[in-house]
Image (cartoon, rainbow over all chains, first blue to last red; front, top):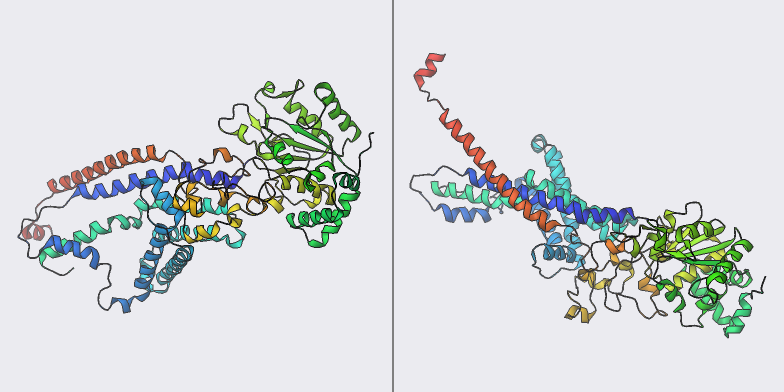
Length: 222
Length: 364
């Protein structure tokens, strides 16, 4: 006799994870190396500013809203901060996740308590829903939103929602089943990661540095 | 038929007071998650029930389940309840041996056909009958023959309930659970390696007192009263899990402080049992209290569920080999993709034709 929930959990922990990690690593390497190998044509003109310094500075300054933009799109900025911070806290400071990272690469750090993790996760979900709402409410954003945007938003929120349900056994949830669904949802995110705009989590630094250094070379703001 | 004393007689013989018996019934009612008002009914039913014949079949097992049920520090009331049934066949406990023992089984079956209770511990090998035989009869044949006249079957221990350790990969004997063979009889699974003694005796007592229909089971055939919640949810170390305090080794400060054993591979979050509340050896302790993570022994395939000492959140497959392959493959694909893009760019550049304003004017 088998427990189908446990079989699903074991598939997620074995074959499912192997496939997802393989696609994630291979896909990210493919994307990043493709960009790096393509390269740029060498600019022989003398730089007017300091491209390297401005490139590095832009990596950080692009995380701060430009003057006046916070008022123009408050939900986008505040929701964006809350989602990213909440996701990062829930992912990086839960004991079970640290155990996973320790198993993968052999490093670990102190865990946060359940109250902080769950608050961060819940706020991230609320922020994600708010960000989704702006895609519907704002006509311009609605016109710009495609299927992949909704897919990426859903894939980002699912691990948070399933994790919250699994830990708190909401709606009488079976922990084994929901732990399996949680891991599977994270694996779906891993698979989609290299081939959607989620790749920005890895390429954002390259892109910001590139934009900053080009402007720096021209002596312009970035 | 020989005289089989009723429970009051046995109580007197064992020096157990009526007050002690009623306290047991109240405890039993509570353990079964039944309304308190049912305690007197259970007491009455146990006192007045005729001792049913019980045939205990031991197949591919280690006798741990029998050891557990007899380790109730006689003469406890659980032991007494065990005496309240007529245990007509049990390899380890019966005095008779050889042909006499087998005759006892057949006699009990004939005398109580359709009404006796079969308790099974151990899995059944299907690959070769010779892997496990009793008196020249294969486990498979004996189970089928004995189950035919049974009122119900109780599969005691994870081997009988789910295949257990003999069923573990690569399952050299083709071991299966009772429910994989018998499909036309009610089967109650009481898994555990071994099960908690009071869980075994309580289920039998409930069967005697309130009937088979009163035992509500989950999708794996386990009584919900004992297998309704995970060990994690009832664990006294749960607050440490919630606080993010974990033992990282068996001898570190966390272990000495009694912190959560999740990172040492505890399967409490996915294991349903009352180990954390009922405990063992008269409520003395249970594995997690003794400092060892739960192995998840009340769940199917617990032996093959990714390693006893790996946390539940960690992968249990061959991701390192796959990951190395992904590194090499991804790097190769990335460089090839970049090179292809460069080639496309170079081709576009060489195919580029210069256009001046005169050419444009001429075309129009």
